[in-house]
Image (cartoon, rainbow, N blue to C red; front, side, top):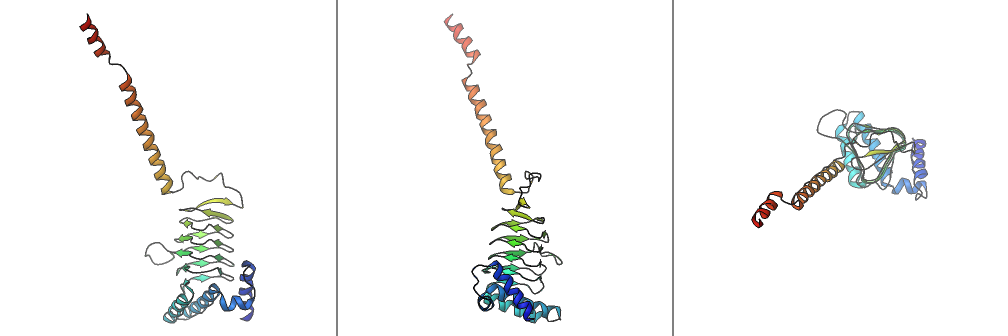
Length: 228
């Protein structure tokens, strides 16, 4: 037990240059406390004590500002940095040595029962304020940028950014072969629609100007007859 505790603390110190001692991490880090409380709550849930499990979970949420459902499955070495506002849903799964920053949500979509939260591989980093919604998989060593909203799967060793998130790097290289044009991006689609509408209006205005500038042949003939 103490060896596992030490390993958890050491994994945090490796990723946080601000950590000065194991005692500091153990006694002051809200993310570490939240994960410890989660492991107690998860054990209670697995051993048939759902009410006590939720009680431990809610008590931890009030103390740390981090909500982890007892039903989530979390590997070793999870580091929740700063932590305030982090939410991890009931069917979420997190691999080993992942890092989550403040405001991260591993959430579900809809009210269907069963698997409805994301699965993170090993060594995944999720930036502050990012939202990963739905039962998709985030590959090992993936990086999710701050503020991203992830609605689709992210492959191993990839970096995803934006709203909705799209992959911009795999193994540090831009994936030029990926279809970036047809990515479901409502903001880009609306801008394209407005741009096309403006182009159509410009063409209509140009045609009208051309028609107005063109001399009226019938009127010219009438004027010629009058002078004659």
